[in-house]
Length: 428
Image (cartoon, rainbow, N blue to C red):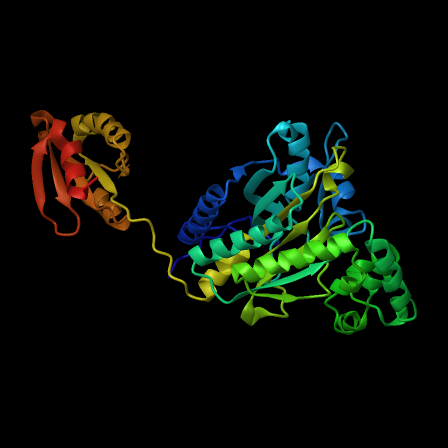
């Protein structure tokens, strides 16, 4: 059982450390995402965690929960108003415009991995600093891309051993057909305002589509009775959504239509989707979500350019892997531990350590320890495969001892042959 030391300081509420023993899960998830992204033709982009506050207000929507309640805001000494990013998409779209990516052949495919920040009530699986992977396809409105992005998530989940997932999907129309639906929705809710929760009282005035998304029990029941946007789609949106579903059928990706799914951001148009574990249906544990945002780039000052994307909640993916007890096999290590004894042994070990590293051998050492016992104890803790022992006698004779840490057998070899001998033993 690990022993915790006392400290004057505690980690801020809603944050957490990802300790070394947890890293095996995170390394696996990041590796799979990067490999799948590359195989689908996505290039990585990293944007700052700080952006102008107005970028998020303009794109995400002034009356969304993110802007009203969940932003970490700061003002610099120069009076610049900045925010820690609550999501990736606005920053990536800014970089697309500012960085000249709009001149590239389209569609432009970009992905990001990193932290996001939301000031929300900490609960299981949710943190104020969490981690996301984000995928964007810019410059193409073909519905096949909506379906392919969902396919990408299922490719990632399959490689991680995650099964029994379901896609919830809906269409929220476009700027042409949504206003008419908005009127129908407002008319439906107008005489039911007294039944709303306090959040929905505000949503009714500023963002009525979000009434469908409320998790309050009474509000959720009302949403089931409300008019469905699918019945108000224009011909273009209806055709687009029909095609997306046909592609999902062709890919044999499981989905259910959720008429209450609207996503909480103003920039979405047409397709919206979330992907959930099947057994968690009805709880706040969606693993991924996204959709189409054909008007966002124009809203930010660019040309009218369609786009679609989605984000993956890495914290929830890691938690689900652990909950389902999916075994993550660590990358097989052939760690070499360099043991040095005496002043001359230490001097020669410094140069040898660099030679081993340059040869691609994962090498560790503890130059501050002077006894063979203390150094071999550390080698055991690190689960080193071989120990190379270079003492005063070996240094004078230009030799070195190779000890197999599993069997305890030892072999003396000339110092100039040690790299070749170790590689032969671990078959590099």
